[in-house]
Length: 446
Ligand code: ADP
Image (cartoon, rainbow, N blue to C red; front, top):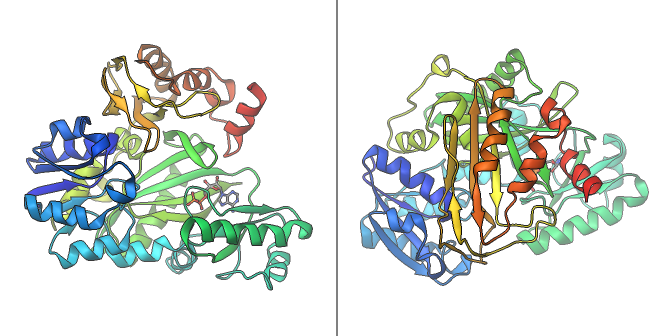
Protein backbone atom coordinates (compact mmCIF):
# COMPACT_ATOMS: atom_id res chain seq x y z
CA UNK A 1 0.00 0.00 0.00
CA UNK A 2 1.22 3.51 -0.69
CA UNK A 3 1.96 5.21 2.64
CA UNK A 4 2.22 8.93 1.96
CA UNK A 5 0.34 10.69 -0.84
CA UNK A 6 1.31 14.07 -2.21
CA UNK A 7 -1.76 15.82 -3.57
CA UNK A 8 -0.69 17.76 -6.66
CA UNK A 9 -3.76 19.94 -6.92
CA UNK A 10 -5.79 22.61 -5.13
CA UNK A 11 -9.37 23.53 -4.27
CA UNK A 12 -12.19 21.10 -3.67
CA UNK A 13 -10.49 18.16 -5.39
CA UNK A 14 -7.40 18.43 -3.19
CA UNK A 15 -9.72 18.21 -0.18
CA UNK A 16 -11.62 15.31 -1.77
CA UNK A 17 -8.41 13.31 -2.20
CA UNK A 18 -7.22 14.22 1.29
CA UNK A 19 -10.44 12.87 2.80
CA UNK A 20 -10.00 9.54 1.03
CA UNK A 21 -6.38 9.27 2.23
CA UNK A 22 -7.41 10.00 5.82
CA UNK A 23 -10.04 7.28 5.68
CA UNK A 24 -7.46 4.81 4.43
CA UNK A 25 -4.92 5.82 7.08
CA UNK A 26 -2.50 7.23 4.51
CA UNK A 27 -0.39 10.30 5.36
CA UNK A 28 -0.96 13.39 3.21
CA UNK A 29 1.19 16.16 1.79
CA UNK A 30 -0.43 19.30 0.40
CA UNK A 31 1.51 21.40 -2.09
CA UNK A 32 0.33 24.91 -2.71
CA UNK A 33 1.14 28.23 -4.32
CA UNK A 34 1.62 31.37 -2.23
CA UNK A 35 -1.99 32.29 -3.14
CA UNK A 36 -3.32 29.14 -1.46
CA UNK A 37 -1.55 29.19 1.92
CA UNK A 38 -4.93 29.48 3.68
CA UNK A 39 -6.69 26.77 1.69
CA UNK A 40 -8.65 24.19 3.65
CA UNK A 41 -6.73 21.19 2.29
CA UNK A 42 -3.45 22.84 3.29
CA UNK A 43 -4.76 23.27 6.84
CA UNK A 44 -5.96 19.68 7.06
CA UNK A 45 -2.96 17.94 5.47
CA UNK A 46 -0.33 16.27 7.65
CA UNK A 47 2.40 18.27 5.91
CA UNK A 48 2.43 21.09 3.39
CA UNK A 49 5.00 22.51 1.03
CA UNK A 50 4.81 25.84 -0.79
CA UNK A 51 5.85 25.17 -4.39
CA UNK A 52 5.81 28.61 -5.92
CA UNK A 53 4.03 31.85 -6.82
CA UNK A 54 0.37 32.06 -7.90
CA UNK A 55 0.61 31.45 -11.67
CA UNK A 56 -0.09 27.74 -12.27
CA UNK A 57 2.89 27.28 -14.56
CA UNK A 58 5.18 28.29 -11.67
CA UNK A 59 3.46 26.13 -9.04
CA UNK A 60 0.77 23.53 -9.81
CA UNK A 61 2.29 22.80 -13.23
CA UNK A 62 5.90 22.95 -12.04
CA UNK A 63 7.04 19.32 -12.21
CA UNK A 64 10.49 20.01 -10.70
CA UNK A 65 8.99 21.60 -7.61
CA UNK A 66 6.48 18.82 -7.15
CA UNK A 67 9.11 16.08 -7.46
CA UNK A 68 11.33 18.02 -5.03
CA UNK A 69 8.39 18.20 -2.58
CA UNK A 70 8.04 14.40 -2.83
CA UNK A 71 11.73 13.93 -2.08
CA UNK A 72 11.68 16.35 0.87
CA UNK A 73 8.60 14.83 2.49
CA UNK A 74 9.22 11.21 1.52
CA UNK A 75 5.88 10.91 -0.30
CA UNK A 76 5.76 7.62 -2.19
CA UNK A 77 2.76 8.46 -4.38
CA UNK A 78 1.16 11.43 -6.12
CA UNK A 79 -2.53 11.97 -6.74
CA UNK A 80 -2.92 14.54 -9.53
CA UNK A 81 -6.66 15.28 -9.15
CA UNK A 82 -8.13 16.69 -12.38
CA UNK A 83 -6.76 19.44 -14.61
CA UNK A 84 -3.15 20.63 -14.02
CA UNK A 85 -0.80 17.62 -14.44
CA UNK A 86 -3.45 14.89 -14.30
CA UNK A 87 -3.20 14.04 -18.00
CA UNK A 88 0.46 14.88 -18.50
CA UNK A 89 2.28 11.75 -19.68
CA UNK A 90 5.68 13.33 -19.10
CA UNK A 91 4.80 13.89 -15.44
CA UNK A 92 3.79 10.23 -15.07
CA UNK A 93 7.09 9.18 -16.70
CA UNK A 94 9.18 11.44 -14.45
CA UNK A 95 7.50 10.16 -11.28
CA UNK A 96 8.08 6.62 -12.48
CA UNK A 97 11.78 7.38 -13.04
CA UNK A 98 11.96 8.65 -9.45
CA UNK A 99 10.28 5.55 -8.06
CA UNK A 100 7.17 7.52 -7.06
CA UNK A 101 3.76 5.99 -7.78
CA UNK A 102 1.52 8.03 -10.07
CA UNK A 103 -2.07 7.39 -8.99
CA UNK A 104 -3.44 7.06 -12.48
CA UNK A 105 -2.99 5.13 -15.71
CA UNK A 106 0.27 4.36 -17.52
CA UNK A 107 1.99 7.21 -19.35
CA UNK A 108 1.36 5.33 -22.62
CA UNK A 109 -2.39 5.26 -22.07
CA UNK A 110 -2.39 8.95 -21.15
CA UNK A 111 -0.52 9.66 -24.38
CA UNK A 112 -2.86 7.59 -26.56
CA UNK A 113 -6.00 9.19 -25.16
CA UNK A 114 -4.48 12.68 -25.01
CA UNK A 115 -4.26 12.81 -28.78
CA UNK A 116 -7.83 12.71 -30.04
CA UNK A 117 -7.01 11.21 -33.43
CA UNK A 118 -5.11 8.31 -31.82
CA UNK A 119 -7.76 8.04 -29.11
CA UNK A 120 -10.56 7.70 -31.66
CA UNK A 121 -8.64 5.15 -33.71
CA UNK A 122 -7.86 3.14 -30.56
CA UNK A 123 -11.47 3.31 -29.36
CA UNK A 124 -12.67 2.03 -32.71
CA UNK A 125 -10.19 -0.87 -32.62
CA UNK A 126 -11.45 -1.73 -29.13
CA UNK A 127 -15.02 -1.99 -30.39
CA UNK A 128 -16.33 1.37 -29.16
CA UNK A 129 -18.69 3.18 -31.60
CA UNK A 130 -17.25 6.53 -32.77
CA UNK A 131 -18.60 9.66 -34.51
CA UNK A 132 -18.34 9.25 -38.30
CA UNK A 133 -15.48 11.41 -39.52
CA UNK A 134 -12.11 11.71 -41.15
CA UNK A 135 -9.62 8.90 -41.04
CA UNK A 136 -7.00 10.81 -39.05
CA UNK A 137 -5.71 14.32 -39.68
CA UNK A 138 -7.40 16.64 -42.17
CA UNK A 139 -5.30 19.10 -44.19
CA UNK A 140 -6.62 22.24 -45.92
CA UNK A 141 -6.09 20.58 -49.31
CA UNK A 142 -8.15 17.45 -48.64
CA UNK A 143 -10.80 18.95 -46.33
CA UNK A 144 -13.45 19.39 -49.04
CA UNK A 145 -13.18 15.82 -50.27
CA UNK A 146 -13.46 14.47 -46.71
CA UNK A 147 -16.39 16.78 -45.84
CA UNK A 148 -18.33 15.71 -48.93
CA UNK A 149 -17.94 12.09 -47.91
CA UNK A 150 -19.07 12.74 -44.32
CA UNK A 151 -21.84 15.16 -45.33
CA UNK A 152 -22.42 18.69 -43.97
CA UNK A 153 -22.59 20.09 -41.34
CA UNK A 154 -19.14 19.03 -40.13
CA UNK A 155 -17.10 19.93 -37.07
CA UNK A 156 -13.36 20.63 -37.27
CA UNK A 157 -11.64 19.60 -34.02
CA UNK A 158 -8.09 19.88 -32.68
CA UNK A 159 -6.38 16.56 -32.01
CA UNK A 160 -4.73 18.13 -28.95
CA UNK A 161 -8.06 19.76 -27.99
CA UNK A 162 -9.55 20.40 -24.59
CA UNK A 163 -12.09 22.73 -23.05
CA UNK A 164 -13.86 23.13 -26.40
CA UNK A 165 -10.95 25.08 -27.90
CA UNK A 166 -9.91 24.63 -31.52
CA UNK A 167 -13.40 23.47 -32.50
CA UNK A 168 -15.14 25.03 -35.54
CA UNK A 169 -18.42 24.25 -37.26
CA UNK A 170 -18.84 24.32 -41.05
CA UNK A 171 -22.47 24.31 -42.21
CA UNK A 172 -21.65 24.12 -45.90
CA UNK A 173 -18.83 24.08 -48.47
CA UNK A 174 -18.70 27.88 -48.31
CA UNK A 175 -17.67 27.88 -44.62
CA UNK A 176 -15.23 25.02 -44.81
CA UNK A 177 -11.85 26.53 -45.57
CA UNK A 178 -12.37 29.31 -43.03
CA UNK A 179 -13.38 26.73 -40.38
CA UNK A 180 -10.31 24.58 -41.08
CA UNK A 181 -7.85 27.47 -41.03
CA UNK A 182 -9.29 29.09 -37.90
CA UNK A 183 -9.43 25.73 -36.06
CA UNK A 184 -5.79 25.13 -37.01
CA UNK A 185 -4.58 28.53 -35.83
CA UNK A 186 -6.61 28.34 -32.61
CA UNK A 187 -5.22 24.86 -31.93
CA UNK A 188 -1.66 26.02 -32.59
CA UNK A 189 -2.06 28.98 -30.24
CA UNK A 190 -3.72 26.95 -27.47
CA UNK A 191 -1.86 23.63 -27.67
CA UNK A 192 1.22 24.20 -29.84
CA UNK A 193 -0.14 21.59 -32.29
CA UNK A 194 -2.18 22.58 -35.33
CA UNK A 195 -3.36 19.09 -36.34
CA UNK A 196 -7.14 18.93 -36.80
CA UNK A 197 -9.62 16.23 -37.76
CA UNK A 198 -13.20 16.26 -38.96
CA UNK A 199 -16.41 14.85 -37.54
CA UNK A 200 -20.04 14.72 -38.56
CA UNK A 201 -21.75 17.46 -36.57
CA UNK A 202 -24.56 15.97 -34.52
CA UNK A 203 -27.50 18.37 -34.24
CA UNK A 204 -29.20 17.56 -30.94
CA UNK A 205 -27.14 15.03 -29.01
CA UNK A 206 -26.88 14.45 -25.31
CA UNK A 207 -23.47 14.15 -23.66
CA UNK A 208 -23.37 10.79 -21.87
CA UNK A 209 -20.20 9.36 -20.35
CA UNK A 210 -19.33 6.01 -18.84
CA UNK A 211 -17.19 5.67 -15.70
CA UNK A 212 -14.72 2.78 -15.83
CA UNK A 213 -12.17 1.28 -13.44
CA UNK A 214 -9.39 -1.07 -14.50
CA UNK A 215 -6.68 -2.87 -12.54
CA UNK A 216 -4.05 -2.73 -15.29
CA UNK A 217 -4.06 -6.54 -15.54
CA UNK A 218 -7.07 -6.94 -17.80
CA UNK A 219 -9.87 -6.72 -15.24
CA UNK A 220 -12.30 -3.81 -15.56
CA UNK A 221 -15.77 -2.74 -14.52
CA UNK A 222 -18.11 0.07 -15.52
CA UNK A 223 -20.05 2.14 -13.01
CA UNK A 224 -22.82 3.27 -15.31
CA UNK A 225 -23.24 6.64 -16.96
CA UNK A 226 -23.47 10.34 -16.20
CA UNK A 227 -25.51 12.73 -18.29
CA UNK A 228 -23.58 15.99 -18.68
CA UNK A 229 -25.64 17.58 -21.43
CA UNK A 230 -26.27 20.81 -19.54
CA UNK A 231 -23.25 22.80 -20.70
CA UNK A 232 -22.25 26.35 -21.36
CA UNK A 233 -19.41 26.93 -23.81
CA UNK A 234 -18.66 23.20 -23.68
CA UNK A 235 -18.24 23.42 -19.90
CA UNK A 236 -20.46 21.17 -17.81
CA UNK A 237 -22.76 22.96 -15.37
CA UNK A 238 -25.17 20.30 -14.05
CA UNK A 239 -24.63 16.56 -14.20
CA UNK A 240 -26.88 13.67 -13.32
CA UNK A 241 -26.75 9.92 -12.91
CA UNK A 242 -28.44 7.98 -14.26
CA UNK A 243 -29.22 9.70 -17.54
CA UNK A 244 -32.93 10.50 -17.89
CA UNK A 245 -32.56 9.28 -21.50
CA UNK A 246 -31.40 5.69 -20.92
CA UNK A 247 -33.09 2.54 -19.69
CA UNK A 248 -31.38 -0.32 -17.85
CA UNK A 249 -30.71 -2.38 -21.00
CA UNK A 250 -29.10 0.57 -22.82
CA UNK A 251 -27.00 1.38 -19.73
CA UNK A 252 -25.70 -2.14 -19.29
CA UNK A 253 -25.06 -2.57 -23.01
CA UNK A 254 -22.89 0.54 -23.51
CA UNK A 255 -21.31 0.01 -20.09
CA UNK A 256 -20.26 -3.50 -21.05
CA UNK A 257 -18.84 -2.28 -24.39
CA UNK A 258 -16.65 0.17 -22.41
CA UNK A 259 -15.62 -2.30 -19.70
CA UNK A 260 -14.72 -4.83 -22.37
CA UNK A 261 -12.61 -2.25 -24.22
CA UNK A 262 -10.76 -1.44 -20.98
CA UNK A 263 -10.09 -5.15 -20.39
CA UNK A 264 -8.53 -5.43 -23.84
CA UNK A 265 -6.49 -2.25 -23.27
CA UNK A 266 -5.43 -3.43 -19.78
CA UNK A 267 -6.36 0.02 -18.58
CA UNK A 268 -5.27 0.95 -15.05
CA UNK A 269 -7.17 3.28 -12.74
CA UNK A 270 -10.27 5.42 -13.16
CA UNK A 271 -11.30 6.69 -16.57
CA UNK A 272 -14.25 8.16 -18.38
CA UNK A 273 -15.36 7.36 -21.90
CA UNK A 274 -17.33 10.27 -23.31
CA UNK A 275 -20.05 9.89 -25.92
CA UNK A 276 -22.55 11.95 -27.77
CA UNK A 277 -25.90 10.17 -27.81
CA UNK A 278 -28.48 10.81 -30.49
CA UNK A 279 -31.43 8.76 -31.79
CA UNK A 280 -30.52 5.79 -29.63
CA UNK A 281 -26.90 5.62 -30.85
CA UNK A 282 -23.67 6.29 -28.96
CA UNK A 283 -20.73 8.05 -30.60
CA UNK A 284 -17.35 8.17 -28.80
CA UNK A 285 -15.77 11.64 -28.63
CA UNK A 286 -12.93 11.22 -26.15
CA UNK A 287 -11.60 9.42 -23.11
CA UNK A 288 -10.41 11.20 -19.97
CA UNK A 289 -7.70 9.25 -18.16
CA UNK A 290 -8.30 10.76 -14.73
CA UNK A 291 -10.86 11.37 -12.03
CA UNK A 292 -13.53 13.80 -13.23
CA UNK A 293 -15.20 16.68 -11.44
CA UNK A 294 -18.56 14.90 -11.62
CA UNK A 295 -17.34 11.53 -10.27
CA UNK A 296 -19.37 12.27 -7.12
CA UNK A 297 -22.74 11.42 -8.68
CA UNK A 298 -21.43 7.99 -9.64
CA UNK A 299 -20.29 7.55 -6.04
CA UNK A 300 -23.77 8.55 -4.86
CA UNK A 301 -25.61 5.94 -6.94
CA UNK A 302 -23.08 3.11 -6.47
CA UNK A 303 -21.74 3.77 -2.97
CA UNK A 304 -18.23 3.18 -4.34
CA UNK A 305 -15.52 5.67 -3.34
CA UNK A 306 -13.62 6.27 -6.57
CA UNK A 307 -10.55 7.75 -4.88
CA UNK A 308 -10.29 4.72 -2.58
CA UNK A 309 -10.43 2.57 -5.71
CA UNK A 310 -7.73 4.66 -7.42
CA UNK A 311 -5.42 4.28 -4.42
CA UNK A 312 -6.08 0.55 -4.12
CA UNK A 313 -5.35 0.03 -7.79
CA UNK A 314 -2.17 2.13 -7.60
CA UNK A 315 -1.09 0.03 -4.61
CA UNK A 316 -1.43 -3.13 -6.71
CA UNK A 317 -4.46 -4.36 -4.78
CA UNK A 318 -6.76 -4.43 -7.79
CA UNK A 319 -10.47 -3.64 -7.87
CA UNK A 320 -12.58 -3.99 -4.74
CA UNK A 321 -15.64 -4.90 -6.82
CA UNK A 322 -16.65 -7.18 -9.66
CA UNK A 323 -19.30 -6.08 -12.17
CA UNK A 324 -21.90 -8.17 -10.30
CA UNK A 325 -21.14 -6.26 -7.09
CA UNK A 326 -21.98 -2.91 -8.69
CA UNK A 327 -25.56 -2.00 -7.78
CA UNK A 328 -27.16 1.24 -8.95
CA UNK A 329 -29.42 2.88 -6.42
CA UNK A 330 -31.54 6.00 -6.92
CA UNK A 331 -30.64 9.20 -8.69
CA UNK A 332 -28.00 11.89 -8.11
CA UNK A 333 -27.50 15.44 -9.40
CA UNK A 334 -24.39 17.61 -9.10
CA UNK A 335 -24.43 21.41 -9.42
CA UNK A 336 -21.10 23.16 -9.94
CA UNK A 337 -21.04 26.16 -7.64
CA UNK A 338 -18.87 28.79 -9.31
CA UNK A 339 -17.85 32.18 -7.98
CA UNK A 340 -19.46 33.86 -10.98
CA UNK A 341 -22.40 36.06 -11.84
CA UNK A 342 -25.25 33.55 -12.38
CA UNK A 343 -26.27 35.17 -15.69
CA UNK A 344 -23.18 36.76 -17.25
CA UNK A 345 -20.75 34.18 -15.78
CA UNK A 346 -18.23 36.93 -15.12
CA UNK A 347 -15.88 35.64 -12.38
CA UNK A 348 -16.50 37.08 -8.91
CA UNK A 349 -13.40 36.49 -6.81
CA UNK A 350 -13.15 38.08 -3.37
CA UNK A 351 -13.75 37.24 0.26
CA UNK A 352 -16.58 34.99 1.41
CA UNK A 353 -18.04 36.91 4.34
CA UNK A 354 -20.56 34.30 5.47
CA UNK A 355 -20.83 30.64 4.54
CA UNK A 356 -23.41 28.03 5.43
CA UNK A 357 -23.43 24.68 3.65
CA UNK A 358 -26.70 22.75 3.48
CA UNK A 359 -27.12 19.30 5.00
CA UNK A 360 -29.58 16.52 5.64
CA UNK A 361 -30.21 13.12 4.11
CA UNK A 362 -28.74 12.62 0.66
CA UNK A 363 -26.73 15.86 0.63
CA UNK A 364 -23.01 16.21 -0.03
CA UNK A 365 -21.02 19.41 -0.39
CA UNK A 366 -17.46 19.12 -1.66
CA UNK A 367 -15.86 22.49 -1.10
CA UNK A 368 -12.86 24.08 0.56
CA UNK A 369 -14.81 27.31 1.11
CA UNK A 370 -15.41 28.81 4.55
CA UNK A 371 -16.36 32.20 6.04
CA UNK A 372 -13.36 34.50 5.68
CA UNK A 373 -11.90 32.54 2.75
CA UNK A 374 -10.47 34.79 0.07
CA UNK A 375 -10.96 33.30 -3.41
CA UNK A 376 -7.79 33.91 -5.38
CA UNK A 377 -8.29 35.33 -8.89
CA UNK A 378 -5.66 33.09 -10.51
CA UNK A 379 -7.50 29.81 -10.95
CA UNK A 380 -10.83 28.49 -12.19
CA UNK A 381 -13.91 29.82 -10.49
CA UNK A 382 -15.43 26.61 -9.16
CA UNK A 383 -15.60 26.91 -5.37
CA UNK A 384 -17.55 23.79 -4.67
CA UNK A 385 -19.94 21.10 -5.78
CA UNK A 386 -23.37 20.36 -4.42
CA UNK A 387 -24.43 16.73 -4.81
CA UNK A 388 -27.91 15.51 -3.98
CA UNK A 389 -29.11 11.90 -3.95
CA UNK A 390 -32.67 10.57 -3.84
CA UNK A 391 -34.41 7.24 -4.38
CA UNK A 392 -35.99 8.58 -7.55
CA UNK A 393 -35.24 11.51 -9.85
CA UNK A 394 -38.32 13.32 -8.54
CA UNK A 395 -37.17 12.91 -4.95
CA UNK A 396 -33.71 14.13 -5.95
CA UNK A 397 -35.19 17.26 -7.57
CA UNK A 398 -37.36 17.98 -4.52
CA UNK A 399 -34.34 17.68 -2.28
CA UNK A 400 -32.20 19.83 -4.57
CA UNK A 401 -34.79 22.63 -4.48
CA UNK A 402 -34.75 22.62 -0.67
CA UNK A 403 -30.97 22.40 -0.44
CA UNK A 404 -30.30 25.28 -2.84
CA UNK A 405 -32.46 27.52 -0.66
CA UNK A 406 -30.40 26.54 2.37
CA UNK A 407 -26.98 27.22 0.81
CA UNK A 408 -25.62 30.64 1.84
CA UNK A 409 -22.45 32.12 0.35
CA UNK A 410 -22.21 35.87 1.04
CA UNK A 411 -19.69 38.43 -0.14
CA UNK A 412 -19.34 37.11 -3.69
CA UNK A 413 -21.68 36.14 -6.53
CA UNK A 414 -22.30 32.46 -7.18
CA UNK A 415 -24.18 30.33 -9.69
CA UNK A 416 -26.65 29.13 -7.02
CA UNK A 417 -29.51 31.35 -8.39
CA UNK A 418 -29.09 29.74 -11.83
CA UNK A 419 -29.66 26.30 -10.31
CA UNK A 420 -32.70 27.61 -8.44
CA UNK A 421 -34.17 28.58 -11.82
CA UNK A 422 -33.20 25.29 -13.45
CA UNK A 423 -34.70 23.10 -10.75
CA UNK A 424 -38.09 24.75 -11.40
CA UNK A 425 -37.92 24.48 -15.18
CA UNK A 426 -40.41 22.18 -16.92
CA UNK A 427 -37.91 20.72 -19.43
CA UNK A 428 -35.41 19.98 -16.67
CA UNK A 429 -38.18 18.42 -14.58
CA UNK A 430 -38.86 16.03 -17.48
CA UNK A 431 -35.17 15.47 -18.17
CA UNK A 432 -35.85 16.71 -21.66
CA UNK A 433 -32.69 18.52 -22.80
CA UNK A 434 -29.72 18.19 -25.15
CA UNK A 435 -26.24 19.79 -25.25
CA UNK A 436 -27.66 23.07 -26.64
CA UNK A 437 -30.53 23.42 -24.19
CA UNK A 438 -28.75 25.52 -21.55
CA UNK A 439 -27.29 28.06 -24.00
CA UNK A 440 -30.69 28.45 -25.68
CA UNK A 441 -32.32 28.87 -22.29
CA UNK A 442 -29.78 31.49 -21.20
CA UNK A 443 -30.22 33.41 -24.46
CA UNK A 444 -34.02 33.32 -24.20
CA UNK A 445 -34.16 34.46 -20.57
CA UNK A 446 -31.47 37.14 -20.61
P1 ADP B 1 -13.01 19.05 -25.52
O1 ADP B 1 -11.97 18.04 -25.13
O2 ADP B 1 -12.44 20.28 -26.13
O3 ADP B 1 -13.98 19.33 -24.41
P2 ADP B 1 -14.88 17.16 -26.80
O4 ADP B 1 -14.53 16.31 -27.95
O5 ADP B 1 -15.00 16.49 -25.47
O6 ADP B 1 -13.83 18.39 -26.74
O7 ADP B 1 -16.23 17.91 -27.09
C1 ADP B 1 -16.73 18.89 -26.21
C2 ADP B 1 -18.18 19.20 -26.52
O8 ADP B 1 -18.31 19.68 -27.88
C3 ADP B 1 -19.12 18.00 -26.44
O9 ADP B 1 -19.57 17.75 -25.12
C4 ADP B 1 -20.23 18.48 -27.36
O10 ADP B 1 -21.01 19.45 -26.65
C5 ADP B 1 -19.50 19.20 -28.49
N1 ADP B 1 -19.15 18.30 -29.61
C6 ADP B 1 -18.00 17.59 -29.77
N2 ADP B 1 -18.04 16.85 -30.91
C7 ADP B 1 -19.24 17.07 -31.50
C8 ADP B 1 -19.89 16.59 -32.69
N3 ADP B 1 -19.31 15.74 -33.53
N4 ADP B 1 -21.14 17.06 -32.96
C9 ADP B 1 -21.74 17.94 -32.13
N5 ADP B 1 -21.19 18.43 -31.00
C10 ADP B 1 -19.96 18.01 -30.66
